[in-house]
Length: 74
Ligand SMILES: [Zn+2]
Image (tube, rainbow, N blue to C red):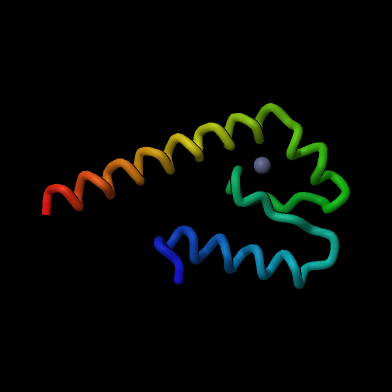
């Protein structure tokens, strides 16, 4: 299933998005804001979103590294 609680919550939010009418939640920015579905493309292109995308992928890399380190350690 999901690796982390965060991932589980993100999936939960995503399923809520699907049932919502014209709102969309950005799991990358994860800022508690629902965006209008029409503004999604603009948001995805925004500098704020791009920054969060970079930050997230860096966090992921760090998590993966520490996971590997744990395997070696044990
Ligand atoms: Zn975003």
